[in-house]
Length: 346
Image 1: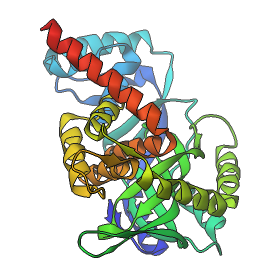
Image 2: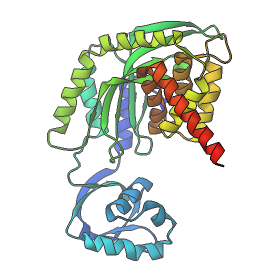
Image 3: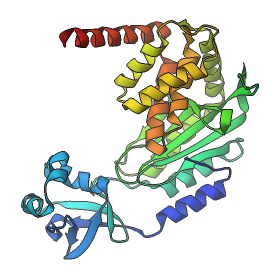
Image 4: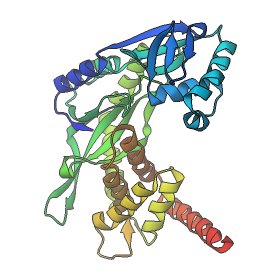
């Protein structure tokens, strides 16, 4: 994600990303695939992004992992057979130049990043929000983070002597290619090193699927509802977060590993989170960790990621903030029992 400090910068990023985009509803009878893996639309060659390629195979019922291993000249007859079977269907193709970004059903309702930005500007005016970070792109997703500078808590001094300030804010996300819903949720932002989100709060959010008429109006209304109570909800979330410094456990590493597995994080992220658990710890014991330490372990590990992948790791921290420590320990116990059972079976 990029550090962005003005709405103008974000607007420029969106305008740049929008260049060359176009959409068309296409009868499947107009689509074929050639022996080079390219899509043909009325004979014109179109490249497929990896995401659009997966959507094409998914719509045809062809396993993606098989299709990607199959030589293109052998795959083309299979693809074209199933395209012919669906020749009376109509698909929405989202393009950029000669590249297919997404292959969607015609029931997909368009709510693009520029629409999200306009709705955001209308709803945050005069409320004191400041933009901090954003990402724009099909591959990494659309993510915007804004904070309220006067909604914060100082959780003390770090080893470096820096103050560990946590701010309340909002996180807005979207995808133009069917990867995710449009979302607005509250967040807590850790200022150390000017990055690192403490966690997406689990209860104060909404997701707007790209379906149905009046999508933009519905999104704006729901966003307005979240923002109306954002300040008081964030103050409560900051209070809850501050309390996590006093919630202690001897199962810190096990909790990190269990939550990583439960949320399908990769091995490298899990190892980074375990390392950050020890580095970020504010307790005096090397074997006892606070819930605060565990949350920060995940958000620190997330800094190695971008866009959607970073969001996925940070969301784990949000879940932990909402879970009880006793419940977290039970999850860790079940994780350890499963690992012991695996070792004994081998």
